[in-house]
Image 1 (cartoon, rainbow, N blue to C red):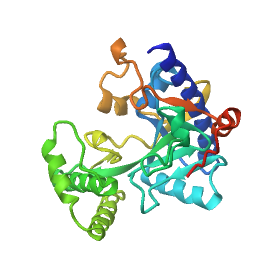
Image 2: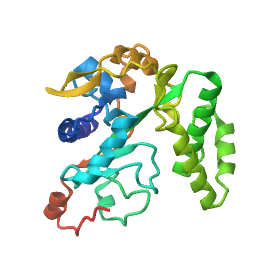
Image 3: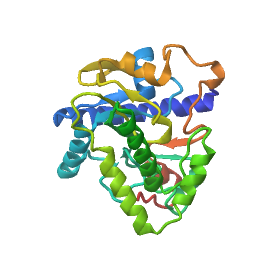
Image 4: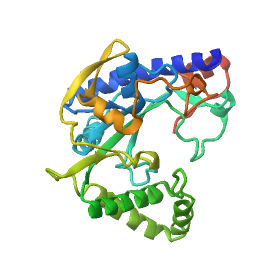
Length: 293
């Protein structure tokens, strides 16, 4: 990473760490279990904190904890200074949730702060991804049906053709499937939402899976996520599944092996600018008012 990118990532890590401290407290106070996930989990194991070039933060929740979290967050008013964009919103374009830190912004340039807010730019704040895990049957027939519904759910939730590597046919077919009335899309979305959670009462012959995006649908985890430990992360303790090694190897293989130097760079926000206090920035620069949607 060049010095500018390194400075950006370090600034982002400071904001994300503060966010996780606040979120962890809320979850512990309400007896809600979670686990740091994906690259954040690798960071905890390999670096005892952030991967130096990572630019996001993910946590897992089993479906029952996830739904209880959203319910309690709404009932209590949540965490001061944050906005939860969750799947209880019927207009959500996500199949997981995002917790945004108010008064922050990740933008391509500071001029974006003064541009009109559009659907594409309505959320510019720093966020944590909160990903539910659902049970998927091991039975091949049921599993195939589950995966079909998961893919259809992504198409009709995001209202965008299915995006997966080496799958132009899926992209084309889903594009055609989107050319139906809005009311039909809503019915399909509701039906697939219900299907995804229908196996969560299974007591055996299942794995866990995230259906948050196409890239993760290839991975399913063995049912070894009941036991949770505290793990050190940047000098703090966060929750993590005790059997993290087995989970990480499903997705990443030898996750302790560092990537090549040229691949050690941010994935989601390379070249972006982080403003950690938007109101202060605008006040100091005297350029109007920032309105968060």
